[in-house]
Length: 286
Image 1: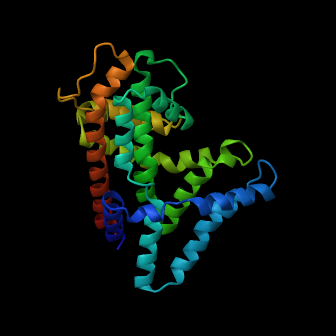
Image 2: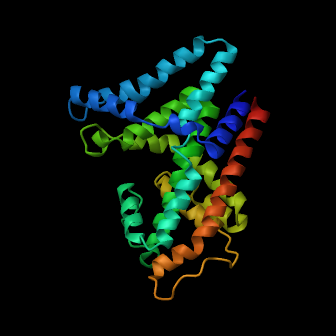
Image 3: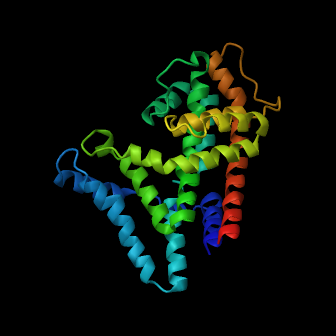
């Protein structure tokens, strides 16, 4: 049933608007605001109430339901946990903004997400590096980590991961009133990141991609965004049909625009291979 749940939810979230009605997080945001107002600064009370308490409460409800009710309730929980809107269209909308000359607004969005590298290791490819970091994190948080923890722990794993992401992105957490749980999220992302990186290698240039994946697979210090950015860059296959960019365009932006179509195609292949990989794992192990 886990395989059926994953395939069903993926199709609903990817090709329909059914999940958009569940992805309105105003209730979660209001709950965190209320908990933050009643707790002391840097108190973990809000974290243990939501997402920990919320996930455990939903687990008890799911546990006591009969088979078919628990199945449909689990599908509903997974549908709430996966993505936020159409993740493929979200990536394409940002690419369109880049093509329309709104690079500054896109970079500002990357900075707000904390995905602009602080070092100057690639000064001529700053936008391209931020774009790869964003693309990897976008698919990781919306798809791979949710499905991975659903596969390991069932609906409670998917709900806890989504609640953790919402907690870390809440304004009270970002402002410092609530303690950040980024380290916990990094730990939960460690295995899904390696799985997603391997899927990107299989979806693109496996020889160079797998070499990069193998080199950093056991590195505990590399961030999830950097790990995926390196794997995506190494796995990218350029077919020479990139879009035409005016010669007076800044080099970093031109570099990004010429490679963004290939990156979008690689991400689509990566998500399909990831779904097939989880399906095979379910069939073999369960």
